[in-house]
Image (cartoon, rainbow, N blue to C red; front, side):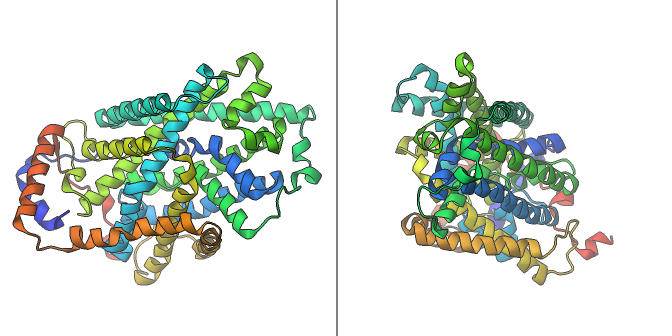
Length: 498
């Protein structure tokens, strides 16, 4: 991770061969990326955690609705940032642009090291568990089998993403439709149950019977569980440079996708409670499968297949977007320069994709990952808050910057108030989990000063990095891409008048 300018100078010999990222993400694919990344394994895992911490059916439904509302507030902030600083990389690019390299690197470090590999591992394990569940109806699938199938799925989708951006986006489109149809099936069956009078758990007198005394700390943890299901709402901002007309299609996709997902999630949870008591839901290891077994009879096999399709598309979406985060970090000089290169013909960031794939497989091999949902959600919310605070800072620092979208200041302030309360009580309720998240993020400080800030490293370090980069280029057939400055430069008033 040596000096960015030196590394660009060292690769001038590739200039004539440089290519650019392809703009193949239209409005439909942009919506599919947001919906496909949000709807992964979360809606099939988090209902149990939300109900456990909320303590009642009624409060858990309120958490789901409010969680979607908070995502909507955050997405409005990201829409402004995305069209004002239209670079790929999302939170990382905005924070680096606003607060400088160290803060941006810490977000990048925590995301690459733990957040996205762990999330990908959770989704991949959910995929394998649901695929194997019909073969092991009376017990949990074998440990080795689930890990092996999850690894094969990640490797296959990495190959697809390395081969073609078009293939990856088409898979995302198709499986987004499939996962929406799966949730629509759950919602329709649940509504039929309600019309038949099976809604005892949803009656107000029963819905707000608490299994435990509610506390602000437990409610905060319920929101963290829900946030895992909603995570991914900002992922379109990671691929801004591959969107057709990003200043138009990015905000449009956000405005369409977030309300749709919130509606679907809320109705899905209502459907769950139309057929299961709170005790049954808490006892279930696969909520959708239990739902199907109770209501679909001989067609109960539809649910594990539907969940498998949903999670398969979620893995593809996370690989697609998280690899662009590595790509953006390497382009800024915060990660090895090889990760900023793309395939000469396919125009895909193969080195970045391989790193994401390898990190996910390592997490899969470590052991159980489901217990890390609170932990990952904490880091997610921390990065969201820092990014949206950056929006307020940018308003003050550069008031004359042209903003195609300019939201009310009340929106980011409201989000940050909620964010501060949520994180504060999460730290109070789970100090070890949240504290470990902070520690891992802060371990990036010495890495930043040694790897990025320290410019005068010994010459042998540069020679080793150059050799590795050269070998990596030959193996992956990649070159450093040209940047489309017409789309990636932040707008200024002087530029707008040219």
